[in-house]
Image (tube, rainbow over all chains, first blue to last red; front, top):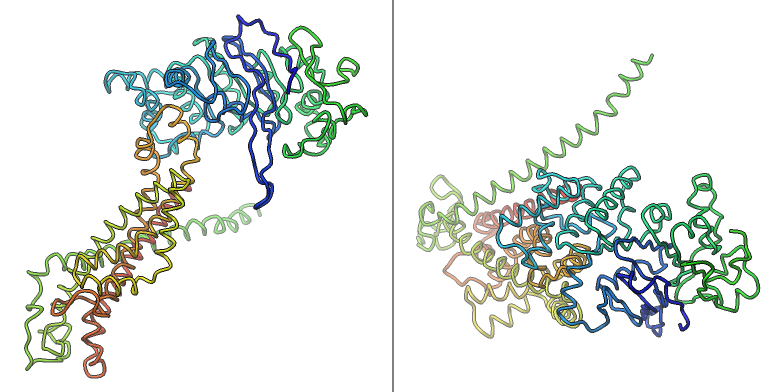
Length: 334
Length: 293
């Protein structure tokens, strides 16, 4: 996994810088079989500028949630570097770094039903990170802060005494966001923040996230399988496939001038008039236990040539801040 | 025509609603029945010294094996003791033992189950293997060995039955804790820096509470039966103190001449266990609808 070109963002702009990030699990394909390595994330590098939104898009199994887990500290990377504001986060962390990350980075997860303890009231859920960290002097201060946070996400004091089961899906995700904001983080890691919600609610929550970003100068890492969501929110986009970037670049480039056949099919699939046709991409994502030789996408690629089956394409620049891992990029019409 | 079709369709809509409310009424009636039986049994056990019409151990050989009458509601046994008074006083000890066991086995089983499920790894392995061993041991044989070794006493009976019952709690609670551990709110609490103690107290325990309540009431019946079995075999409460199990055992020899000496205490035992099981079922049904909401 050498020679992965680092993202070309100037160092000074990057708040989060990730290079060569790899996560390998060892799994037994069958009962009592020898464990085999499974590369969920295979050498991923990107940078997120402060106040920007980096969108990670890919199918399920592409490794996008694993990246989020390593970033928030729920998993440790097998290899590679995570830097957040010039602090390094590796397998061994000082208590101070760990506490700093806890304050600086907050996750918002996909399923608000699972993220909220059904036995607790909204006020206790939102207050939990502050209570654990002991950020406020007394109960009255916690209450004030909870109300302030609920207002920020468009809820009212009336919601504070409800239980999650008494809220709608959109309200639950708002509660989850309020909780994530409790410690005044600088980064939100949004792992499929709207995919569990009704389509009509998705736009509301996305707009709320946009408003909060502008108001609180937040940096977002947005993970979604939905290209439309990523395109709406992000300044930069990385397209993941089998734990590797197929294409990474500014939103305008990736969406308007996609250079990788995989990105092109994703965009075609997200257009409403193509929604009915299921044969845009052949087959399913291959098992990461037995990744295909050569380009990981070649078994499903309509434009694959002989070389794609043997040579693994590396990310290479095809424009300013625009990298593609495809032998044919620049030759095929985009 | 349209009105006709509508009126014909109406019952189809109304019928399920009526059936559900009927089911609700049955469920409520069952709950009330269970609670009133338990209240009656527990109440009379608590008030035994005042409401028992006779001294439960007072013998009156001239009055032996009398059938139920206005004076002796449940008749008298082979020593002329009042069966009704003995059934009430016997309930006192049986329920005391059951309560003690439910408290002890419930607490220890829940604790071990949460540790096993939440912690996982080798600790989980050890606790669950010990539970497996306990499952493989028939409680009556365990009781015979223990009582043979340390002698019968109320404390020993409680200890034996607790040993025979903690594993059921541990298993069920472990399974719940295991699934809760992988819920996102536990991950988020951990990422927020919450201690394991806080996670268990705030996020795990409140979420197993309903299961635990059902388990406790359902177990109550089993424990009462196990205590009666031990007493029946002479391994439990020792004569002359009455207990439902010893009374059934004592009357065994006189079943043909005086059925009431065994059957009536047996009925009290059966009713109590039935009420505990009904209560457990009602609680479980209540939980189900709450989850569905």
